[in-house]
Image 1 (cartoon, one colour):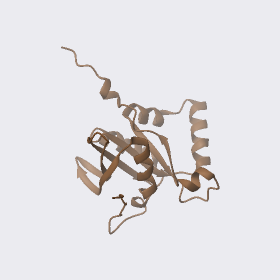
Image 2: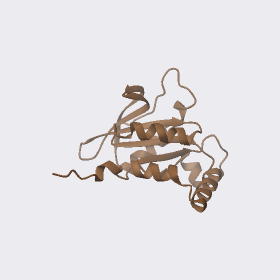
Image 3: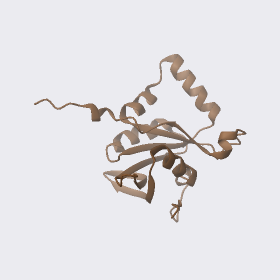
Image 4: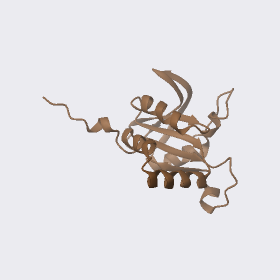
Length: 164
């Protein structure tokens, strides 16, 4: 049986960032089978969405999502706080590919890549949603979302050693 995304009854603009193509992207990237999608759950903090999935080995994996139309800085702050609650965590935002390239180039050139470093340090992935933009590109016509940063990076606390 194929998994289909269904939005909450009173879905807002940010809820609609998490679409079927995002789930399909994560299925392929993480080799998972989605089981359930929960919206607006409170686990220590409000979580925009939670995906529960199963690996081929039968292990349950949880994905947390922070859905933001634009404010990446705020999304990163919220994601860092919520990251420890899930196996994987993704920020999904609108971003025009040209704007993302400009930001990355500027950040790297000026040594201002703090948000990306924080995301990598905590194992927070970033998916940009292109649906809002007219993107004439073969890849974008197949997938209306692009994975920029994977949540497969182990968060820094996975490497902490406990001294005897």
